[in-house]
Image (tube, rainbow, N blue to C red; front, side):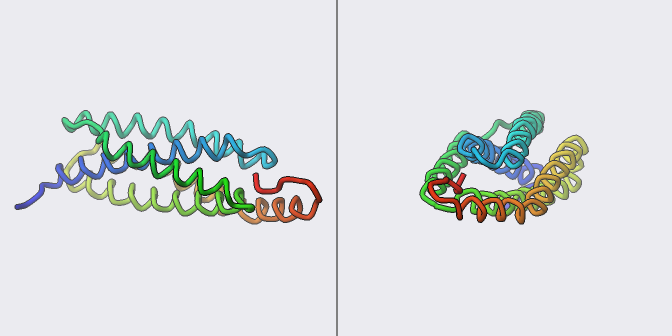
Length: 170
C-alpha cells in the first residue's frame, strides 16, 4: 500500500501541531517558574506567543488539506510537556537544564519544519510551504538566542549558587 505526498504531509502537519502543543505547555511551565533570570523569562514568553501563532498556521494548513489536528497526538504532546515540567522541578539546576532542553527542542522543531517544507514542495502545496518557512525562521531565531545565552544563564546560575540561602535553580 502506498501513501501519497499529500497524505504524508497531512500526517506530519498533525505531528507538528502536537509538537507545538508540547512546546506551548513546556514553555509556559518554564516561564511560570523562572524568577531570577528576567532576560530568559522574557524571551521564553515571546516564544510562547510565536508558538501560539505557529499552532494557528498549522491548524489552517491541516484544515485546508481537509484534515483536523489529531486530538490523540495533541494530548500526548501535552502529557510529555507535563512530565518534563514535573521532572525539571526536582533538579537543583533546573534553569540550566531547562535552557539546554529548550535548545535541543528547538532543533527538533527545525528538523521537523525542514521536512515539512520539502514535503509541501513535493506535494505542490505552496501555502503550507510558506507557512513552514515562516515558522522555521522563528524556531531558528529561538535556537540561536538560546545557544548565545547558555553561557550567561550558566554564569548567573553559578554565581547565585554560591550565595547562602539563595535559590539559583529558577
